Amino acid sequence: MARARLAISLIAIAACAASLTLPAQAARVQVGNLVLRADGGFTPRLLPKGAYAPIDFEGHADIGTTDGSMPPALRRIALELDSDGKLDPRGIAACPPERIQGTSPSEARRRCAGAIVGRGHAAAAIALPGTPRVSVRSPLTLFNGPPQGGQATIVVHAQTTYPVVETFVLVVPVERRAGLYGYRTNFEVPPIAGGFGSLTHVDVRIGRHFRSGGRERSFISARCSDYILQTRGTLLFSDGNVISGSLFKPCLPLP
Image (cartoon, rainbow, N blue to C red; front, top):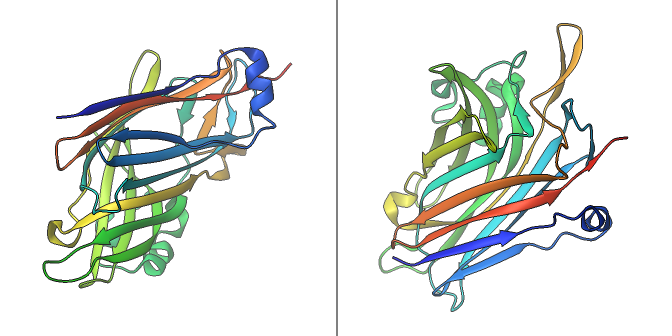
């Protein structure tokens, strides 16, 4: 089993300030001929040092190979999120996963409109035996899910139409933790096209601003206590390859 580690760190205040004006560069990591390109960020970058303020998060990832061959299927994702970030679903409707089973992306969004916390796209390559490879793409929707064991959940919805219509409704648990990383999620990626498909792209924007209890609230918020917000992740693929590492993004504390 091959393993690669990736760390991109901008820690100095000067580097933080400079990065606010420079275009983002996606991180790239390679294991054998497997290549992952990923990046993410949040707005605004200017945040309180002690209190939490609303933010929006954007992220994207592309999985491919150096020789253009079919990439191995992604089987499991584990993510840990900085304790300077906070998830607060209070005041947002919850979407039971059974409500959107078997629905199209537009119908799922209609049925659980009040629970939407993120939108994006997912793409996959499907290579059925004896047929050319086909690329498929679907809108991706993230809903606030019902809590499980006192922990928050996010319900992810997507749908493919090749070789048959296949609806994916995935419940992602979000575990609150103490320490450097305040949240952790660990979940399996369901097989695509009976195991003949491989995830090749994901992009998502997460953020929901609303009023509850007479206050302005946000599904995700953050503070800037140490000039850095970081995410640590591990991806496990069907061929045994593991990509593991951290992504650091700078912030600046408000005066």
